[in-house]
Structure formats: structure tokens, C-alpha cells
Image 1 (cartoon, rainbow, N blue to C red):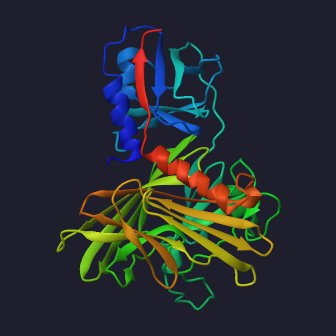
Image 2 (cartoon, rainbow, N blue to C red):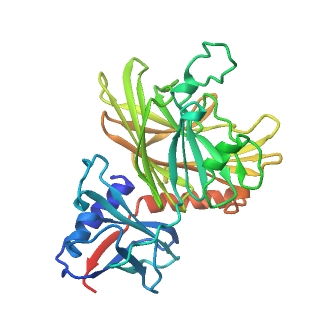
Image 3 (cartoon, one colour):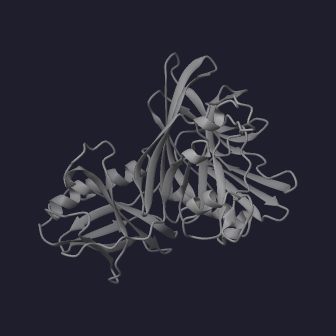
Length: 402
């Protein structure tokens, strides 16, 4: 199965390939086959399709409206490797979001050229490299934040200065109570392990996989990379952020393996999309293990953890209740290529087979009771189940003249 993003693009391209009368405005219809609600659904229209319908359209002079006439925030993404000075034809996609209610299987929008410059929409997704904190790479949306560890954190403390040293490709979770961005504020205050009302970093990663970190599984043992070696931001809000983290080659059970993780972070979602591509020689395939830390709480906070596995959905769900920090749900969704479950001393694992150069597509993320969206394991499990259904049922997008 194609990745969710790829399916959206292919569906949009195939469905909107018919001729559309050139003009100042076009109608866009998004449909899907599910009866469930789909909040914050990302609608993706390839820029080339829009240019054919609206010749001369400019990214900063568009207006997107829903059927009720409300102006919607939108984003136009760049082609990742566009040359400096590329024209508008080099853009990739027009993006905007819609909350599909339960039973609403179709929604109509207009995209119009205007003489006005579009407003700067509030940013709900963001990522950045943090050289001032040992090369952390961090990202967030309006629901939660994450962190990956960089080269400086792994470097030995040669000067014996007391520098922190951690070699880990596990993924950290920062829990938020608020919808606005917190990354810059929290790094500035430097005590984000305490909740001042915005949330906190209460998640312990260590050498575990955190939430969504990966490795190579041989049936008995997990071999993992070191800290990420380089990063690249491809899009950075306001409603979608895309970036890549590269991991230098390492020995995985006798096979030299290198890895590139591409994250797609959308506003309104607790689970990020990850396209994880391994390159290797000397084997026909490898078994990729995607993990969740079995016990992420501080020792004085840990109470209990519940785990649920659903092979039919390709999901792995955990619910950790802490003494005073509330409860944290973590989850993984593998829409295609499910190859079983496993575990080691630190992690619950979801398995997938991968060929060299072929991306493994999965969803990973978390939800916190104090964030206000989830009160129980049942709430969290229902959310993950819905996300698994959505991942397998992408939208179809069509264009027509108004």
C-alpha cells in the first residue's frame, strides 16, 4: 500500500486530471468512504493541478473558503530540492484542513485568485535544530512535541566537564496543555521537566526506542543506530511540517544499514506520519522494529502500564498512569506490511519487513490526560483505531469549474 501522503497525492492527481475551465476560481470537492469523524483532515492538491485550473495563481494571493464561506488557513509547500530562484511552477502542493463530522463523506471548497495578499496564518506546526542544547532536533504541533537526539549529545565528555552523554535514537515526547507553540519558550526557561501550566517533559527515553524509534530485529535482539547525524527541513508550517533525519550506517546483525526518517507533522493530530527508508546490501530484506518504551515515567512516578495489540489494525497502544502527572498514551500504527509483534527488556515492538530503499510507513505519537483530549485508555484506543482506519482510506479530491 502507498503511504498516506502518497495516496493523497495520487488520488488528487488522478481525480483532478480532467479539464477545468480557466478562470479566477475553482471548486474543489473532497470525498471519502468512512462513516467516522475525521477532524483536521489534510486536503492536498498538487500545485501543478491548481495552475492548470487557475493559470498565474500566486501562493501569496489565494483565498480558500469552505461551503459556508469561511476563509481557511492554507499552506503551499516547496519542492524539496527546488533550485534557487525557482518559479511558482516549482511548488509542490496546496494544503488546507477540514473537520469532517461523523457521516460527512463529502465537502466542497473554493480556491480563488485575489488581488489581496493572504494573511500570515497562525503557525500550528514547527521544527528546528537546537545547537544550543547538544544538537537536539525538536518538532511540535498544537497537540504535543517531540525531540530526537543529535551528535553533540553522543560526543564523549573529553574535558570531564560533567557534560551529559547519551547515545540513543529513541524519540522523546513533550506533553502540552496548550495549543500554541512552546518549544522556544521551554528551551529559554530551561526547566521544562516541571509543569508551569503549559505542560512538561515527563518522558524518559534513555537507550529505549521512546515513542516511534526504530531498529533492526533478528528474532532475538534489537540493533539500533546512534544519534541522528544530519537533518533537513522541507516544509515548516503553518499547518504541516516535513523534515528528514539521517542516521549514519551501523552494523545490524552483520548487515551494514543506513536510515533516513521523513516526518510529516500535521496540525490537529496526535500521531505523526513517518516514512522510514533503510538502505543496505548483503540481505534480501530486514525486519524493522518500531518501538514504545515500556516504562517512560520517572521511578517515583511509575504506577502501571496497560498495553493493547491489534494485528488486524496493525496497532500497538500503551497507557501509562503516573502518580501525579496524569496518564500518557503512546501508540504506533502500521497501515501496511505488518509482520508481527515482539519485545525486549525496554520496548514493546511492532514489526515490518523492509527491502533496501523501500520506505516503511507508520504513524507514531502520544496523548496526555492533562492535554484535555483523552481521559482513559478507552479514549486513547478509540482515537488510535480511528487513525488506523483513516490511514487506509485517503481522500479523493476533484476539481471543477464554479
